[in-house]
Image (cartoon, rainbow, N blue to C red; front, side):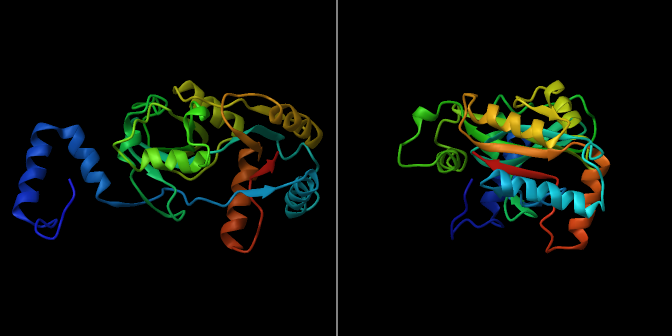
Length: 266
């Protein structure tokens, strides 16, 4: 339902159509109503650091150590390594276990709903955790060969999700974050396990006790064919209370580059 100059959002015709939709097709009305709203993300999106070489990764790790004033490697709780997949970032919002909306990243705080993604099979309509939860991740292509060669994967994904007339059977959601409404971060491996238990297509992930193990896994993941386009490897600090401390530090110091995850480009 799109307005024009004659039938604006306050017109009798539009209101009558909305009432008919709400009475006869409540699920479709819910999606329609949500698509007309602006939303705020329950948690702001932080910019992930991207580095092109191992030296940049080591610098990031040392920065985390410096922030914690002499903390030894291992006391951070290790690192979690997973493939970084190219695509479009979204947030799936659940309330009392039911999928209520799928939002684009927007500007990191404000977002719009993407109605067309409410029905794809890799985003469960219901989860076992009966609380408000945001599951974030990447929408990518199941079959890269179907996209036009001149377009990037992200551009091809965006063309599909923002044009309801196109078939979205070639889309798949790969989760990367599980956020409870209390704002407290779980250990990264625990978050991946919760998502897997709730029916999400979780990427391969490895808990590395040391930086050396993380770099070994980086080499392995970069050379592995996961069926999706992998452009790097995401490395996250494992320990939940360390993550929360870093997030708190970033909130206080907006110029800080500290974050609990980094993408080491392949």
